[in-house]
Image (cartoon, rainbow, N blue to C red; front, top):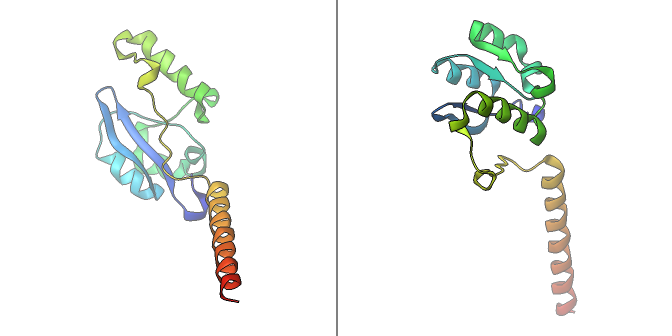
Length: 134
């Protein structure tokens, strides 16, 4: 969730693959996109609590929160969900080398650090140019 921009990081998948491509969008826009899908919707992540009332009212009985021990996204919770799925349907298992991390946006701290470093580099270059002119 990107609270500063009032957006949620989202994606939706079913047994056939991707239903909604990974994106960062306003919560109401996500609800509208999900209304066009079929079946129950299992929500994970911190936005599911923050926007619980909105998702529940917009999506009705299709809206479900993941159990507390799986709701917060982490490698462990994703592996636990995957293990449950594979236990029910072994054909959906994938090799670990097929898994990739997809960061939709760098964390705020990383973006700020990169901006600060770029500014420091530009300042050094400007100072060097000024020194060469004198």
